[in-house]
Image (cartoon, rainbow, N blue to C red; front, top):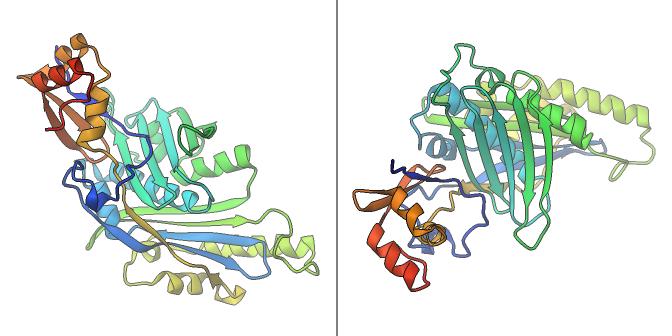
Length: 332
């Protein structure tokens, strides 16, 4: 039986900026200039990021007709990966991948060094969504992986842990406790608001060592400062995180004004699906004739980008002609 091909791209971005790449599908060109607000507590071992996707969340989460609980889970994953990617100095993409045996067996999100963001949640054909809509109940048993991919000429760095805890924030905590041994606190939020879907994250980390801290500040004082920062960060509410009318600086001031919070330069986030007809044409050019015939339905091969949920149709005859000439086909 012929099957529709599905594509999940985890490759580097096209060299062309999106507005010049005419082979891309008609997807939103949305950027949030102040998507990530880095901050730190002066002379204390605490740094963090406040992530707010704003209208970008709605554009990303409504590409598929998922149930609200699945959209909320994906929104949290997008906010989490954005917060972690923007804490690194790298060129390429940083991705989150969770695989389980539940109703949502696959959860993907990735963010490039430039802030291009995308995500995907796959639903099981055999397992219904549970009434208890925690991340663990939806994903079941499995693993969580974080990967830094800097292209084919660089070694990929990946950390993998089992899925532990009820929420995605719990699972991320488990990863950092066991793999990175980095004290942190993570608050994730995603929900549908009157303005549309929104997703956000507040992440604080304890800085390793004494870099940037007055030598006169003892280890005991640093530990107390970290404990205080965690208590203050825990007072954040989902409503505050998701409220477009509250500027990030105002949110951080509410939380940490007693600690003298300082804000760094904000980082942008943007709609970041990197599919295109040219890329998919190259993929098809690698299949045998029998495989191409198997994919053909009514004379066409349809490939679906699972990130942006756009169908690309390629006439089977054009693929065959291009393949015989040794060229990538189907970019008509």
